Length: 312
Image (cartoon, rainbow, N blue to C red):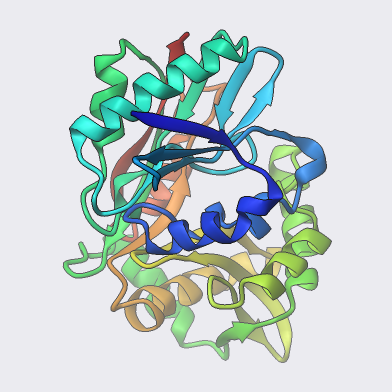
């Protein structure tokens, strides 16, 4: 029998410890990260106990009569330990559905954790979703490089990197998060009429909380930042959370030099390097084709993140 408990502040230590020891959890599931925007979401995270032992977590928030896993995170889904097996996951889903029904929810919106973040296989939830007749309603395409056996850059990309390296660019780790986020803000406004998910203040604060996981790397000339990438680093993945460059930086391919340095030196021992999603809701295919082609030119290839709806 599975007991379902709604998260409260008294569970923080047990929650974080379980995430740390899990097979598919990352620092995004630590409570300090989940709660940086606590005022934007009504948290309704769950803990699952079996015979008195914590066996799974569900980072989640509620919106009306819907539950989402979790609206403030890039990915979500049930976090499990290495002892999790398919039969236990089916029990977890049965108990979760009953709990949500009793709480008056009508729908669970479930975003998966892409497999590249799994430290060992952890797709028991995908079978449980299928078994419970969940509906796949969205699939995002990510571009990632498998660094143990990377594919070569495209011919044009190789030429651009080689040419850019002839310049006087300095690549380094930086702590100027505030400066970079303002650069990113201007770039997104100019290109997409959009804004970063995080404010400069939020990103600076999160980086101070998670210095081993949130890192900024930059390319500069004469001490002027021309390009930067904020990396979200987990056990298996170096993920580009934000990528930005100035107009001049674009002209001299500062971003090419920076990405090449990260791929071939800084993160060459990491399992995956992720460029993130390349989606455009305005496109007939849902893809941002030029953005995806740009990432693929570095040898990245597609993985997907699935989103499900489970009627309760």
